[in-house]
Length: 304
Image 1 (tube, rainbow, N blue to C red):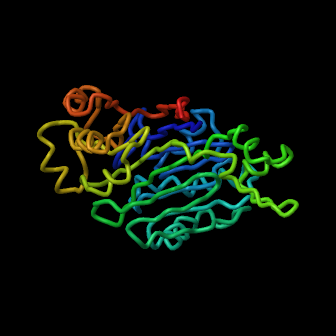
Image 2 (image 1 turned 180 degrees about the vertical axis):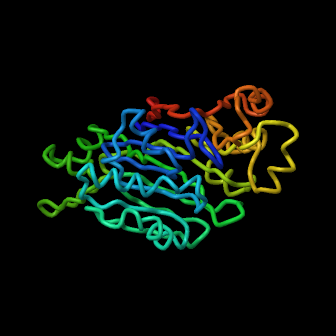
């Protein structure tokens, strides 16, 4: 199962009760953070989660409301006695930008391993996660991310018996090993069925609607998507500043056939997002207003 916490939902500036953009996930003891706006580490502590265990940090783009919390977060991670490397993923120029921010956090007890995105789509296997980064439409280079937890095929003891595979090799075959024994070769497909549906979470913000979001969010268990403006009269402003409205996010969720949509990255002028949610729900009924520290546990399909 994948624990998901939307730490901050604000855009542009923090407000009382609303931190800036950040999302955190936990899977098999490995934690992943997407964006790190101001107040992120406070939100993590309020949630009761730990900064020490963050193994991967993904940055969507280099605007302050998405990255300004990094120096403090890295210092807190260092003060928590973390010594294992931290992987940091983001647009081209990531190391240069983070090095500038680290003027106030120059010495850390752990290494930062940078992965800079240069293509429109990337797939990265790291710390048990499969991360798919995809380019979106903002006024500077910006990426969305799909986080996938893959699920292997089901083990069938009857297949193992039919293939006369000694029981002492069953566990190794389930782990993907190929075994040669007494002139015979045993392969995982002799005991395991096809790969089953895993878990998929897609996160994107600071973008106009684009086909890349629909493509990469297709069939997601949860889409967390920017809805900067809920008001009907903000369509022109959304287009001018390369952001999205509630209704546009709902249309993407519908086209991508996701299970659930959470809106996030609200304009500071949008004090009560829930007041404008009904228009989006008419387009995609399972639309929900995101709020700070909103949490869900995504689980594997029990019928698979």
